[in-house]
Length: 99
Image (cartoon, rainbow, N blue to C red; front, side):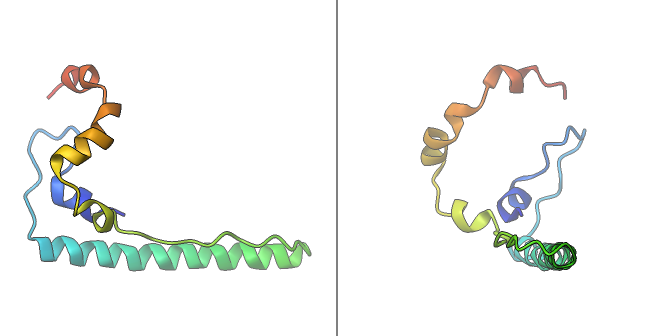
């Protein structure tokens, strides 16, 4: 889930930009979303485990982890990001987007 994404904005094609949020609010929102995702994934895991038990299937469900993308992107500099990630972006496609 995206604490970094929530800090940047929404590229969904809106005609107005999203209001910049206080970093503490972004962190709080991301934490609450993480709690919700953990509950959903736990319920799904419990459901499939029960289903597998009824079928006598011994398949073990994979381990799940909900991570905040801000945790691994907050220390990246702009130059480091562009050198690692930016080379995969197609500028022509971005320039062709309608506003």
